[in-house]
Length: 416
Ligand SMILES: Cc1cc2nc3c(=O)[nH]c(=O)nc-3n(C[C@H](O)[C@H](O)[C@H](O)COP(=O)(O)OP(=O)(O)OC[C@H]3O[C@@H](n4cnc5c(N)ncnc54)[C@H](O)[C@@H]3O)c2cc1C
Image 1 (spheres, rainbow, N blue to C red):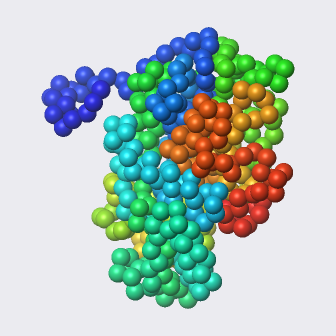
Image 2: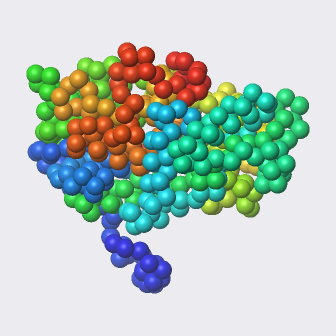
Image 3: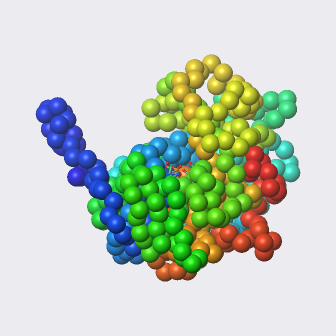
């Protein structure tokens, strides 16, 4: 179904009873060419690009809960391609280019809003580090602007520039960064994939991965055994549990990350703002709520809710850069399970088991990667070779000493 103002008008007159479901609810078939486990952003975008760009047929997405129940519907919606390292920057820039054409591509309003992102800096060494990062962004075509204090004051006069501990000296700005309505991304990809013949099967948890003679032949699910030539795992926070079904261990820990939304306010934020001396990031949704977050809770967990010490830490970060946030009322908060890799970078790779592929380790930053992750994973699944921008996201990179540690923090999930 296509949408138009006229359709909304006439549906309104007839009690909104004529809308059709956006995707079918098929029963699983006995066998598929490609099975995707996990109906989050990455699983759905992989299915969409497999069918659309690589003309693959007989594809199914198996989702434990409902579409949008995982991190794709829980994140703080920030997109950006402001990375430093060569393993990351071209990949995230590919993602940004796909975002910029996504709504036209899958004909769905995802409220993509490129209002810009400002990473504040507070001292001279940080300015040097951001300048270096900005140069890397410019080389990949992502674009970067260094703003001095006066220029930041002009766009965000409410910030606490003269804070005694963390004075604001300027910002690294990517004007193409911004926010996207997260669940619309899941719905758009799901509808697009369904139209291309992909079976999206909700409430169908995978309970076991079937391996015979080092070859993956299918999965056991709550709806029975399903066979497939290729099985692609995209389960984000559940990566370790699901890969363990095939006897594989990952350099990934699961942690809870919280998000917070205030009551609706008049437009106040020019775009996304991040604190440079702590972990705090904030944007304003189209409904007016300030959407913000900070650090993971810091212990391994599969709970989709967090605890108060981190709430306090995040609010302290907010108060340090924009004290006016203390006057707003918190409306909602929730948690999501993060697949934190040991160098802060993801994996898109084959495994040593024939026919079993893995996509995960997205840490805090997998939402912005959704289009490129799906595209590159579909490329790997269809052609058998990694896409050129995802060459470094291999599972053996720790053995090879080729870690992609963007922050230079080592194996400390809470610092990436
Ligand atoms: C609070 C919060 C804020 C964030 N903010 C940002 C941000 O601003 N920008 C950004 O880029 N990233 C952000 N992220 C990270 C981003 O949301 C994730 O990295 C990304 O969404 C993960 O990929 P996904 O969408 O496929 O995950 P999910 O939506 O979690 O998809 C995985 C799916 O697998 C399913 N599953 C699990 N086990 C099984 C099983 N056994 N069988 C079948 N299905 C299974 C789950 O139900 C789930 O639906 C944030 C995350 C959180 C939690």
